[in-house]
Length: 261
Ligand SMILES: [Mg+2]
Image 1 (cartoon, rainbow, N blue to C red):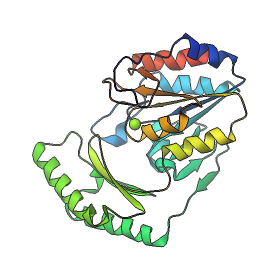
Image 2: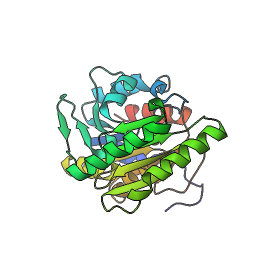
Image 3: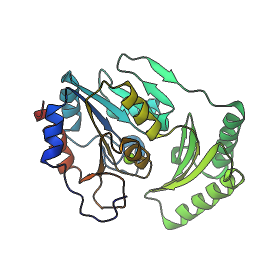
Image 4: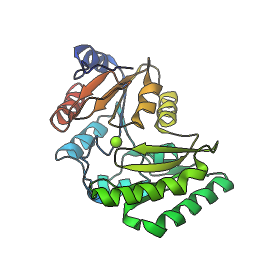
């Protein structure tokens, strides 16, 4: 764990290894990494210039580019707005859209599905649908940008609804930057990274860019096998090896990745 803020932009050795690698795997979180946080999360489009660079990297045949996000496919696809869509691991590792357009799904156990439906219905009693995030494997409430009163109101209700499932073996309750999420255990961004690494040919150079707590699972999965890169204005404790500040250093990084082709 890196607890000091002496992490830097990826160094020369990073780009030397990238250059020498016959295969490259670039994994990117979306919110807070490729796009800034905005109050309406359905308006969170990539920083200007990002999409063009993603297209160019994908066009490099030796780079496999994968978006690894907590968002479900039906949310991430219109926001990314890329045609053809890149490969995406969505819903914290519960949905996989392959580069050929096919989708790999991971069905939930019936009892878990019932709990998620139930939590969603109870959330709706006091929380408007646009402040909720219902994914195939989780239900979340968002209160970013709301007044203190509303935030408190939403947070109390969400905590109360989720309380009975706090210690459920198959579920995980987690607060994040601006909300609360009840999530099905068993898959996360780390499992996505692991399957991508397993599928990759030997001598693949791998990197993962992410900003929040859920990206730490990915950084952990990459330890000793690739480079975790924290993308964030403010430093925080992380398992990443490098730290870049968006959007300038993000654009520089994607351009550097491309130029190292
Ligand atoms: Mg993020």
